[in-house]
Amino acid sequence: MRNRYLDLLRFLAIVRVVVYHVTGWATLTLVFPAMSVMFALAGSLMAASLDRSGPAAVLRRLRRLLPSLWVVAVVFVPAMLFTGMTLSPRVLLWLFPIADPPANNWGALALSVIWYLRDYLWFVLASPVAFWLFRRAPLPTLLAPYLLLVTIEVGIYPAPAVVREFGLYFGAWVLGFAHHAGMLRRLTGRVLYPLALALAVVGGAWIVTHPGPRGYDLNDNHLGNAVWSAAFILVVLGRAPAGVAWLSRSRLADQALTVVNRRALTIYLWHMPFVVALTPLVDVVGWSHQDPVGLAVRVLLVFALVGLVTLAVGWVEDVAARRRPELVPVGSPAVSGNGGTDRRAVGETVGPATVPAQRLPTEAATVEINAG
Image 1: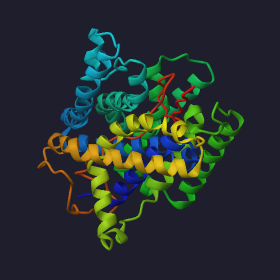
Image 2: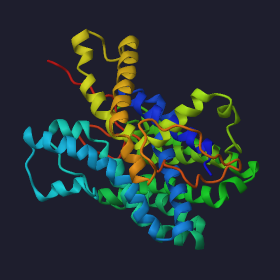
Image 3: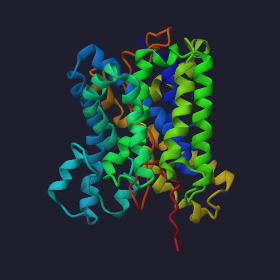
Image 4: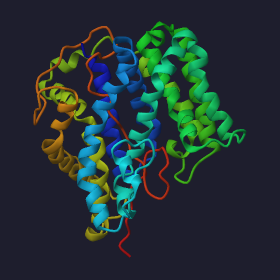
């Protein structure tokens, strides 16, 4: 049974990610911290799979994750080799990205989204042990990533990148465990809302007092991001409605939700190359980078181009999930009405992208390519 509310959250996260990468509006990261929401949804799905299949769930998740990446690699790796990337054994990371795969200058920009798959892969590999610990000591397991992040951010522990990323987003993943276990739903309003408010105040205060290069963009503030996002997740998952009844009354909305959820990985992987490719339009046409008309046109063009690529290669997600391949997913899946975990969800898919200069585990700002 599918939970259409979780599908709706994933749909909103994917749309928000694309719009953010075109516009660079920092406010969007505060209004909807899509990155952490995506990790929380994925953690909930992973917990459901571990309950069903045990450690074998790891291989199933990898089977769903990697084929769409390989399609991207088939297109872009030869193009990068032809335009100056050095061939080395590290190119094999495009098959299994436990670290950043090699890329040339334009490739590092257009394919910066790969960081999410790298983190997702590590989280999947860690999940059997983490879920075992969570079942025996839920609260310490949940708090551990946040405490780790605090020690890193205040300078007590100069952690390597992969450890820092566990501190940054694995807390959201474990909140997904808690959602699957029903712990968030069981929190009374007297506990959940004050807790979420306290986290939002602490996270917001840290963000305001530690602004980054883009102001109050969550992606520039790891600790503020993690705490603010935890408050958001507590509310949207802890008070998830039993269903989304209006979807069944709107065939168009229901179909759009189905398409985006079943093609979320393809949309994620391919949207950033188009964001980068269309950025020069700003200078060619003479728009400013925040011109409303220019932004609207670029958002629509990115979605249109992603739609075309999705028609061409999105069926790979069906093959990876062992479904009948379809150019456009149709039909409304069976719906869970109890707010429980989506047991057949395709959406352990991904979200946002990072950009340029440093390939940090954060979403990217708008890419600006100046012609001169």
